[in-house]
Amino acid sequence: MSFFSSPVRKRSALQWLTLGGLSIAAGLLGACSESKLQFHSIDITGADYAQDFSLTDHNGQLRSLKDFQGKVVIVFFGFTQCPDVCPTSMAELAEIKKLLGKDGDRLQGLFVTLDPERDTQEVLKAYMANFDATFLALRPELEKLPQLAKDFKIFYKKVDGKTPTSYTLEHSAGSYVFDQQGRVRLYSRYGSGAAGLASDVKLLLKN
Image (cartoon, rainbow, N blue to C red; front, side):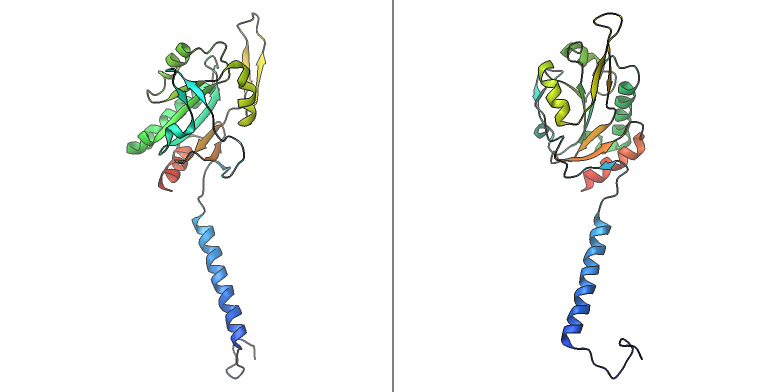
């Protein structure tokens, strides 16, 4: 007759406590696994990079993440003369805002230029008008751009054109997502789709 089915053999207090402790531990582990948010994007919560910035927007105002407390912030790095990836990503971000419905006002889209030489404040302002009136473009100083890219683990490389001003850029194509407290939470790969990222934003807004 097994230990668990025997009506005669008595379990000691220590055995009961041990079994009870295991049950409680299992319950806590189960609760933790159930409460972990399931994102479509890559969860980078707790990352020691992409922490913050201090950059001038296309209206000439100095900005940092604390300016957007209470909103989920999505940051994309690109340049205005990018032929496909950049406008596609920003158009997708505008679509995400629409998918959020009434919560769209709690999303802040940011475009950080990797080409401050050509992307002047006026150029950036006109570029952002193509997507959403609430989105902001940020312009780093040219000499500070390498450190900013390093801080956010962004790759970029100038590719020479036929003339000194006709160059293009190769660059990272994903977006960083920050929660309402300004903490980096997600990295969304280019081409992941508006629906999945909109779902991720909804989760962050609820939590």
